[in-house]
Image (tube, rainbow, N blue to C red; front, side, top):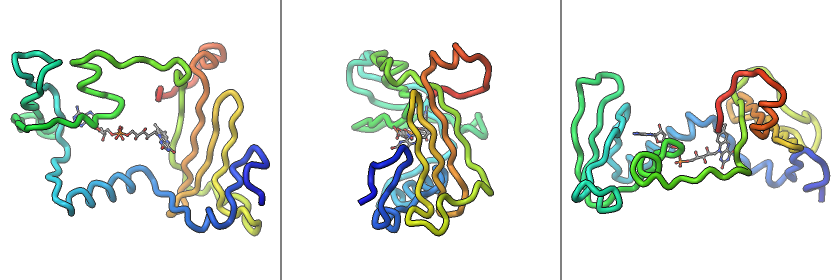
Length: 174
Ligand SMILES: Cc1cc2nc3c(=O)[nH]c(=O)nc-3n(C[C@H](O)[C@H](O)[C@H](O)COP(=O)(O)OP(=O)(O)OC[C@H]3O[C@@H](n4cnc5c(N)ncnc54)[C@H](O)[C@@H]3O)c2cc1C
């Protein structure tokens, strides 16, 4: 039993053989095409930019969304519906623009940099942990995970206050 013994993620071999790690773009593509297959109407390259509510009250029932094509901005329209599920993630159009009730969780106030790298190699070749993802967590977190196409997802995250203390590097907050 070698799980949880060291500061690297020591997934046991049975976990590793079941692991299937994809790049984010490929994974999103799989989910989207599956949704389409089971009957969801998918509109790509389309941005929702405002929501119409009963009596213009954002706490009331949403009625319709105005949308615009992001490639050709002359293509736009309105779609109405019975139910709205806002899945706009970090942008959170309902939470941020209308309900304005999103709260910042201070313990998640981190800065992260990440990217996909070719040629970074595979961890632990020839050992029982061959191809295990590498995780380190101290005040922040670092990981390197090899995806199925041998591209490595490399990620570093640390508290925002440490960035202010140490100075300059160009990052996206997550
Ligand atoms: C670098 C990184 C690594 C991560 N690693 C992990 C991990 O290993 N495991 C894990 O569980 N989580 C991980 N997360 C977190 C995870 O990605 C998010 O929690 C998750 O994607 C949130 O899902 P969501 O569907 O709410 O939003 P998202 O996946 O962000 O989807 C929102 C979608 O809405 C679209 N959108 C936004 N605004 C509009 C608009 N106005 N009109 C139309 N479309 C719009 C966006 O383009 C996007 O496609 C990671 C996040 C980052 C940034």
